Image 1 (cartoon, rainbow, N blue to C red):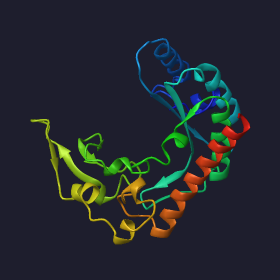
Image 2 (image 1 turned 90 degrees about the horizontal axis):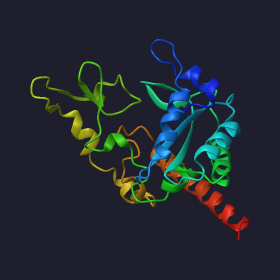
Image 3 (image 1 turned 180 degrees about the vertical axis):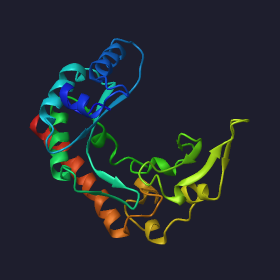
Amino acid sequence: TIDGLEEEHNKNRKLLGGGTTFNQIISNLMEAKNMSENFNVMIRYNTSIDSDVIGFIDYIAEKFGNDSRFLISLHSVGSWTSDDTEKSDCDSLSDEMLWKYREYAYSKGLRVQELEQIDKILSVTCYASESTNFVVDTSGRLKKCTVKLDSPQNEVGYIDLLSGEFVLNNNFNHWCLSEINPKCKSCSVFPLCTATVCPMKTYDFDKCRERIINRIKSAHSIKFRYIGEHL
């Protein structure tokens, strides 16, 4: 994660002792760029309405735009609480503005994660639905969701400190083996999410479908417009 240019990033991403992190991250990425191995690095940028998004995209494009192993992922900051997985107001960018910035990044020659994955099979599944995905807290307890951290349903077991084995409880089945909503089975975008866009089932069915379709339309309109302008 690089949260903006040097000043903005260092303000948001400090070391425990108060030191800065921007230059070290860029240095590490440049070392990776100089390697000959094949890999993929996703540079995530959490932005707000006060961020210099254009300046950041220009900087990343200059550094990594000629290397297809690097891609960028743009997200708006949000205030996420344990009671609601929807973002509350906290200087968040609108979806419309986010897609404009993603289009700009695409026009600068950057790979954009949201454009590459949106219409592929299982492209909008939640990582928490994967049986091998866990969040480990400081006491060794196992959780699934990085948003609803305090929800009792989110705790799925613990790590046995003697054996190192994962000891799972019945909550694990809810995340990875839960029954599929009959409405989801008949949904036109079911292959993209297989009813796992949110295992906590926090999204209304119609709202969920509309959200996925709008994301697909936004991504495709950018690609087709860019292709048309460069034919």
